[in-house]
Image: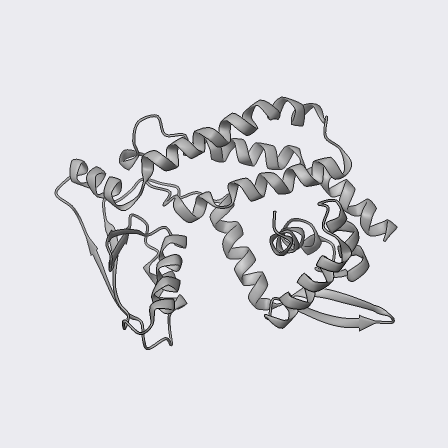
Length: 266
């Protein structure tokens, strides 16, 4: 787990409910649980401040850090994708984005593709991306005021369910994703009994909960959260999500106790 990601996760799951800021020495104590040395914490905090993710202020001899508004927005957006799932029946409509970016703006084009994937769109071709969910507005807002990005949006239906399934299979690597969900279940489902019994306490619970988030967080980047009728048989995604939510909840109390104790001690 990268130190930068740990800082974001500590704010998102713990520090937001404890005033939303942290003294440097407290952050150092928390990061020690993950074997991150103090020198690394100082470098990462300074770098995140320079990049606009952290604000800092002096309180006597101490430095106090808090996330910036931009960082909270990014964190909350990611949290929604990780913890929430689409509900209700699908109306059969595909929402399409067709983009045009100058060849000289390759970095911007890659940024656009990553954002499309984050919002659950998949590539039907290199410049045509689609989603069964109406998230076109999110894409338009993300690139509002970027004149180099030209976006056209459409809604359409296919010839029928068989064609819809074929579209989904071409736009996303569903079989590979399904296997990786199964691998995740193989790791964490056997641990649920121990979580329920409270076998993990203190720093061990905090580290385990953070590792759980780390292992699960990349799936929403690749999982478009498709309606059930578009998924291959034996889909493990929903089971993995349920196991993640249960494990995250079971580890909450001991992890929060550990954080509170470290804050008090620091």
